[in-house]
Amino acid sequence: MTTYGIAPDRALLIDGKCVLGDGDDIDVVNPATEESITSIPQATLAQLDDAVLSARRAFDEGEWPRMAPEQRARLLEGLWRSVVAHEEEFVEALVLETGSAISGARAVQFGEAVNFLRWYADAARRVPTTPAPPDFGPTPTTGVIRAVPVGVVAAIAAFNYPLLIATLKIGAALAAGCTTVLVPSPRTPVTTLLLGRVLSESGLPPGVVNIVVGEAHIAKALTEHAGVDKVSFTGSDAVGALVAEQAGRHIKGVVLELGGKSPCILMPGAVRGPGLETALRRLFRNAGQGCKSPSRILVHESEYDAAVAQVKDVVGRIHVGDPWRPDTDVGPVIRAGERDRIAGMIADALAEGGEIIAAADIPESTPGYWSAPTVIGGLTNKARISQNEVFGPVAVLLTYRDLDDAVSIANDSRFGLAAYVYGPDTVAALDLAKQLRAGSVHVNGGHDRPDTPGGGFKYSGIGREGGDQGIAEFYELQHLRWAL
Image 1 (cartoon, rainbow, N blue to C red):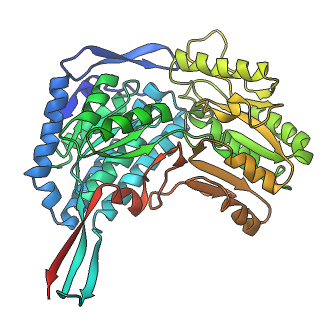
Image 2 (tube, rainbow, N blue to C red):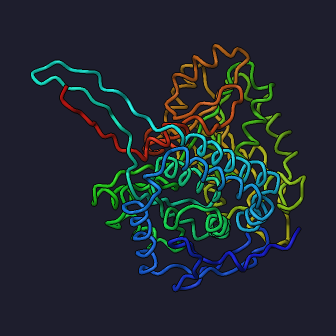
């Protein structure tokens, strides 16, 4: 492990300057060791106000929304290069504060973030303008429909993928010509403050991106701030509802990426293929702390025993432990409270009649917030653990009678963020996927891409992130018309 220069990255970013917060310290803990990494002085409400006013000034009076798209794209490309140049610092910060295994921290936490940022830089060159064809009514007119930036965007991120979520939000907003105020989770602020240092050196105009750290009262004040035009939030559906309510009182639009209880349907004949192991490893990565985790595994009732045997084999090969080891698959969950909450949900499932099919070994008698990757059987989709998001490395193995029953079970959820289908016949698997009420469906593999939209149905959110549709969330449409 290298020595991470953590002290310089305690500063907020306000109006292009790195400044220390004037509020109480937030202790940042390494979940693998339970030791304090650093303390971050959080922003006061006055500093939050300064950040919003800076973003407001940069939008209303500054050059960013008035730049030629090509110029904005070049500056975003410069930011992307700067982030790539600091890869080792970012990866180390991610492992330290999230507990993510280093393999996942590099490939997913960092790798996907820079892929999205690079794509947004290219996309910034494209500003949609649609001609409105001539109309020869009482007053002949013609015109165009312009996409114009919505204004100041409040971006509120979750703890599980701090850099990826930050780049998803600010990348889309900046590509649209907006300015931003970003609030990371107080559990994982260090990576985002490192991003702030890189931003301060990247050549972006002051005030275009501001980063403040604080507890829930800071995020609440930001969503309600009169200087904010739109709110983008990632987190639980319960908190998302509060964010929407707070923003709605001031008639602000929202983009909400919320929870999930994603089904994975293994069609008849697919149990012995790679799908089950792929799904479980997708679930267990980042200790199950992912909204799209395939946490409900559905198998045909005739293949349940075969699925159980494969689950035991896969889980038996999962290595939980020191996130710095290259052979580690799963690190700790973020805090002791989350570990205990997950254990309580497992105990509740067992009390309802469930049984543990397999559970991975976890480090014994060592510090760290370890939660064993676990698969539970013997339950129906009505069980509480089948309906509620665990946000930990826990899957439920369910059975279905036929494919109509599989679709019914998969859709029987208040969530609809993602779904997964594996089948020996890709055409049949695609036909099945079209019946699922989820914002994205992965068929026989596939991966998230920066050029496509992600988001959810039902309680999983409002709006989209990624792709041109994600950038469009930060546009207003303006119709310019004139008489012929």
